[in-house]
Every structure is written in structure tokens, then in C-alpha cells.
Image 1 (tube, rainbow, N blue to C red):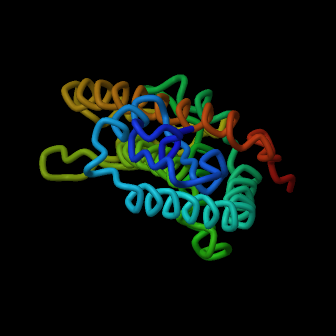
Image 2: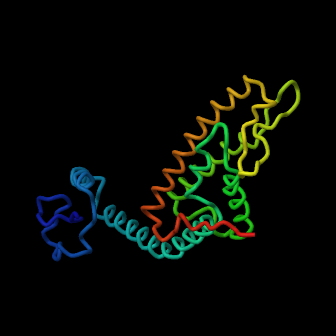
Image 3: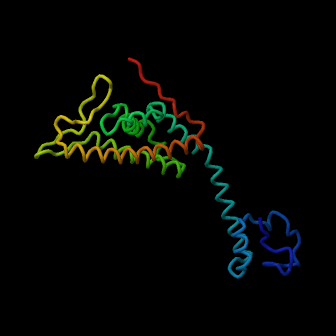
Length: 226
């Protein structure tokens, strides 16, 4: 906290002719470094400029808290929708056996994200900029990885799927039958690197949600029964 007009006439922007210098109107919230900078450069940080800075800050804080409740609720609603239909807490276990095997339920991430654009388009992008950045990074890394899994390799002019169809265990397997050794080796290296990047983005998002969005159940997913 700092005085806009110093209490002492010898202080920064001092004026002993004024009264009530300890009132709210004459105080501005500054960190220690900014306080020092403001008092050293009184020619730039005039009374009028500091009052303007204070007003701008107050307006920004006021508007933020006015918007926050509904925007926060909207972000929580989107996250809850996502967690209800995506086995979020199981995603790392789905890719644990890569580069050789992956659980096909990993595809629910893209399926539900695409569905959300139809069901709740007003909730995405997210309002919280930091949350949006972390969620976007998570989704981007997911698509990078899933794109290789569902992609093809060109072998002698023909396209060959990188992974075979799902088996009875709900798994996709790296196609080691029709892909040549060089393609398999290249795919394995790429998948290992992409798995690491995805894991990092997933962990970053999870930690952020656990700290800042405790209202959202990350383990809300329940498999549909037929």
C-alpha cells in the first residue's frame, strides 16, 4: 500500500496543505518494487496518473468479479459434461502399452469433444484463459497421438493402416503383420515421443483442475450398459 500524495511535504508528491491523507482516496495498492519505482519517478507518476491507474485497476477488478460467477459456472458445466462421457482418469492406462497396443476407448476424447460442439457450443472455448490454454494443449497433444494411431503408412504405393481393428479385448494393435520393419521402427519411436508429450499435457491439466476446479469430478465417467 502506498500514498498517492505523501504525508510529508518532503515526500513524493507531498502537499502539506491537504488533509485526510490516510484515507482510501489517497491510497493505492502497489507491490514493494512498484512502490519504489513510483516514488523515484515522480515526474512520470504524477497524482493524476496514479489516480488514473488506481481507477483502471478498480474497474478491472470490479468487472472481473461481476463476470466471474457465471463464467466459472459455465466452465464447470463444460468440464462436467466432458468428464461424464470421457474416462478421463483412465486415459494414461489406455496408452500404457503403446507403441504396441492401445485401448479403443481412448477415442472417446475426440468423440465427446466433437459432440460437445453440437450439444453445448456456447460453453467452448472456455472463459478461464489459463484453463483454456491447458485444455487446448491437452486436446492438441491428444490429436497428434490419435492421428498417428488411426493413420496409415504408404508401403510400395499403397496405404496400410498403422493399427489393426479392435479385438475382443477392446484393443487396437500395431500392425506388425503387413508393415515392414523400417515403418514399424519409425512408428514406435514417434508413438513413444507423442505418448510422453500427451502424458505431460494430461498431467498439467489434471493438476490445474484439482487445484482450481475442485467442483468438477474428474472420475465422473460411467460406462454405458447395454
